[in-house]
Image 1: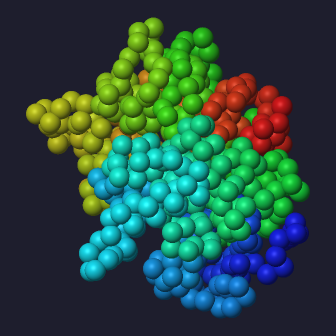
Image 2: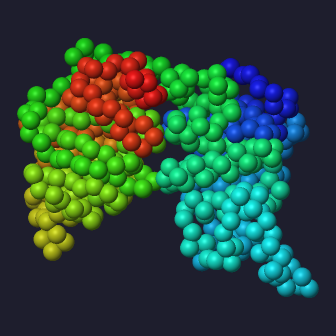
Image 3: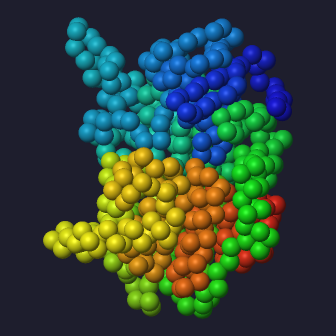
Length: 513
């Protein structure tokens, strides 16, 4: 671990040492740690599953650690709840602002602890105190107005004001900028800089590299639930940060590389046949306006760190989220998707990264899970005949090599890889022109990964357009005919197969040429 100080107090305001936390079958944290100093903005970085959320929940009393210690001013503390943490001076502002928008700004700042006089709420004092707290942050708004009247950025300021009004010494901001535009981010940063000058210790959790280097004094990197290191921001280059977050390929990736072979997976479709074009497509707080083309018979890869905007872009293409700007063209005609149903009708299929919550219905059988999208397309009044369902399910069980006792086995009893194959079959049954695969190989074994990608590659050679999203950079490099690199919610480069390798793609992600 690399540690150096920049003149901050020798004793951290808050320190976590050797934190362990396990859940059934999962080791969430292993000897994880964190140090927060007064008058610093300390950014916590790490990929999905690195342990950031678990560490924050230990710090705020949501989780009780299995091992390790929490020190406040060098003395052990053991918060048992968020209220315990708040009493200790540790306040948290979450990604989703947890306030009552129907109440006034002042009421939100003091909710649950209204100032009183003669046994009644002292409304005048509350308004004056609320205005005074906001004035410290140079925020001038009407504290008597309903919170719903103000933008999400101002609501974040009110949440921060509530946090510091309880004499917080440590402020934790969990993904506070995920739904803010650039101007709103700058407003937030100006507030954080003032709080830093006042001596507060601030923990800032984000996935955005630009924001990390714009506001941070110190960076802690977690990887696979363990502390990778703590660094002064000025001593850590962007490329070095990306490398530390991702780490070296593990044995499974190396094994997959040997299975794939030197040439990897390639498609041989018609490169000139365009299936979909997007022009200026964007959504505030999710993805900046983007232009892209997806060709029939090709695999287009999305590459970037978690939070770069990969899934957000895919959801816009599928109509799962509504775009604020731009348009989509399919077959040379403008299309407007008000819901995923419209996208399905236009020949688009989407395998979500959230297999448990947006994919498999665990209590239903393999056959029933396969038929969902096809039945939705044909309509509830035209039920698919049982014999047809059985024939289709058996066909895909065989072609995809799904290991199940029979087609009426509950999908929840299958392995992750076999569940993923069932979901793939569900969408292929709709005969799509474009298949969006968001992390299709996450959490499954190497053999299942290879089988899925081989099957997708075969379909691609027959003319299927594929949008492939994966956090495993070697996998994207091997599988993609073209690749779009995303960073901080925007597309920052397009590359043909072979133009980037594992080193140069990290440089692009980190912001290099």
